[in-house]
Length: 173
Image (tube, one colour):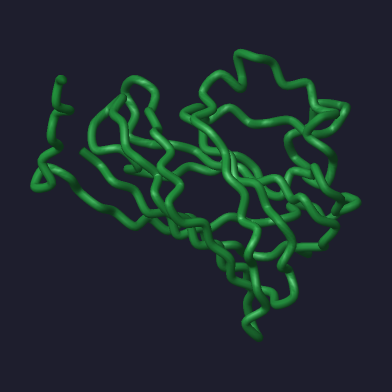
């Protein structure tokens, strides 16, 4: 029986990257499940070398408004391409379901995966939720060390231009 190769721990780097996103850009949406919560946002230095890979292991989401504890899906992608959500193809507004956008397979081809934050709680002045043990293998585009993230709300909640911090834990090799 063949033995699996061992991974050297001394070659791994663990990094915690904070990304701040602004929700509900123009506050014009219905704030319903399936609405784009925030636009495609860069996660700088998410991989160690241009075109490299890393493993997204954890994410903590901190919203600067209490009471916003609904489920949120976060999509990790290697592409900086804007995701459209409005039937007119506008990327300047949020608040419309992504399903009504005119996204193409080519625009979504960089998707590494997605996960849901389902355990948010009201901590008084903020709402906090997290996802542990994600284990998502991510690969950046050639010539880039960045990954990108966008959010989709899965509950009716008005984020009212909230500031959201995503604290992303990466394992890099």
